Image (tube, rainbow, N blue to C red; front, side):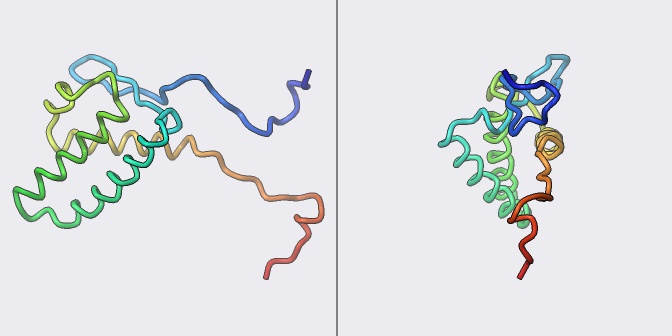
Length: 127
């Protein structure tokens, strides 16, 4: 059995949610990105790229509808318990705020890597 005082190589959690957002008093869990399946992660990457592209050209009703649609799909993926009915009641601004809150929380959870301080690779000079 490992010593609990030793630093772990990897820390895993079985908790699926990284926080929650309340909508009309009801709390909806924010699903950790690592809990998404591979196909869902790929879809999420595509939606992120599409959101960036659409957000740079919000000059028409059509582009705003597309922006709203993409944000709704992202929220359906990260707040699965909310469902489309609840998510579609949110305004574009509120959807954007929910996604921003999720991104902020997800960024804060990213592990920072520590530089190597021992061994032959740590002493290797950078080119």
